[in-house]
Image (tube, rainbow, N blue to C red):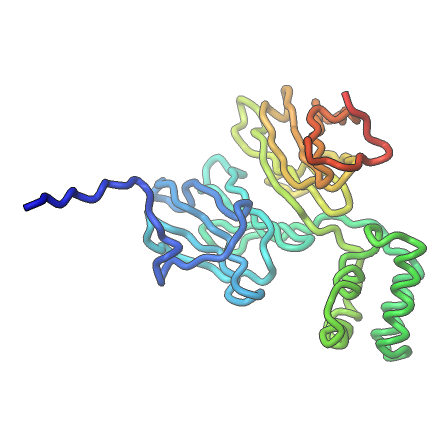
Amino acid sequence: MAKTEPAPNSKWTTPVMMKDCEIHCSSTCVALGPLFTDGDSKLIVAQGGHRGLNMKLKVFQGIEPHSDSSLADMPTAIVHFMNELSSIPSVAVAAGPSLLIYKNLKPFYKFTAPGNKANPTEEEVWSAAAGKEINSETFLYALRNISGQLSFSKMAPLSQTFLLSDPENRASIIDRYASKFAHSASITCISKITKSTAEVIDVLILGTEQCDLHLVDSQAFTIYSSLKMPAIPVTICAYGYFLVDYRIFVQTRDSLVFCVRKGELDNRAVIVSQKKRKMPDDAKVD
């Protein structure tokens, strides 16, 4: 009689196949680190939910759900960081233009990335739509004209969403958001860097849709410095110490990687992807 070979012991688990651990998120919404007074590292996941429903910040102990907290907006990235030496670590969740800070898995602070001033014509059109001075067809025609004059990428995120939305959803967008129109800067990526060797506190690094790179004080939540990137940043990798010397490598949506050395941007791309087709006009290749 043939012997049945034992199944190989795999080190991998499949929590996403378990009913209680089902998650929907991107790789930028996953972190690992201690969150509570027990000091044990835990898996932290910012779940975007399904079609914007059931958005939560979830914590796993091993492969078992530990705790969770509801999110008010769709998360794009998270980072685990230290902002107080005598306290437990915090979690920052990037959602739209806001950075939601959680301590002990409870809402602690909300930081909003600064945005550019909206185009006056675009602002007037949204104001007219909010006051029911124009109908949806006239509003759509006006935004398309602005897109042709201003360029689509320079329009406010709300205008871009409206132009890309299905016709049956446009009326609800006007009703919900027209009165709240603002040229906000949605956060695309987030990272951190240690402040100094003597002060082991993190400085947060944010990239936005408006091509800005902000270095933020994680205690007072004020901006140390800002840089304008040649293109929209999508990934940040940093090392060194903020008060001593550091390097920040930023990958942009144009498949270029730039280096920021001690607060100064080198406009020459240090890495160019082979799949890149077009470079920004103001970018140089080393």
